[in-house]
Picture 1 (cartoon, rainbow, N blue to C red):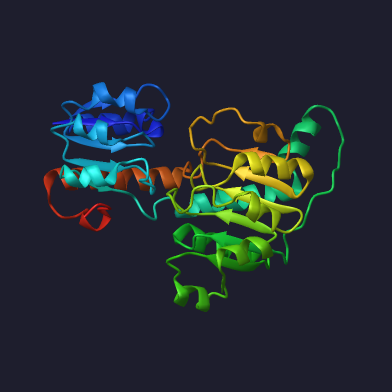
Picture 2 (picture 1 turned 90 degrees about the vertical axis):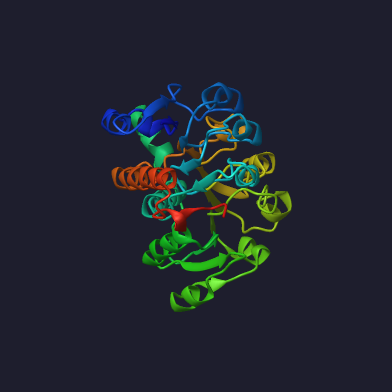
Length: 316
């Protein structure tokens, strides 16, 4: 049995790879980055299973893998997998919901605080020998709009309430019971974006969400808004956002996800009040262990067809 392993953190973990190699022959991603369609094509011709990172798993890649039975995503999102083609070919796809919930919510809160108090800027200035005490913004008592009230959005809501923030949320599949029980105000998207001091994105990238934070919505936002995206690249119109950062309409932004990773150069990233992290939301010791154990268990369950991973199949 042959397995392709591509998540960058797993491919650096000798203990994990040694354990996997006792069960299967491994093909390992050595680039240190998610793989493109072109890079994947020569690797998949004789694999039985695929432990997948944030690679471009297109229909062409799947059709080039005649022996492939299962793809286990190391993480929650699976929009980079051609789910429809996988289903047509009988390739089951799983993910690891919940394994990185707390770590991503932590980072989202950290980016909000960093943007509000200009922590990276002040840190850099002080280390350069300057004593600049630039005024920041308080988040205490302000309104936060959480777009996507899944597990991560709910966890961020609880953190925000610890700062006495008013929590607004939009989700097309809203858990109304949870929102009501936890003091979260349910809003339409335009209502949320126009009434929030802080906006945090927790939705997948698809046709409905691409550039959902666009020029028109930013124009209607509160002056001095902070916007954080720890979900997926492509949700924000970067050209529009850059214009509004330059004008001061947007006070600060935090990015942990990019449409291409590493991100392509864009003028938005040159502003000192734009904070970037390298898709590190799930990179805590606890989350990495949880995703590792869950993704490996899912993969071998699918390959052995024992039913243990059936509830995590995303393309039934």
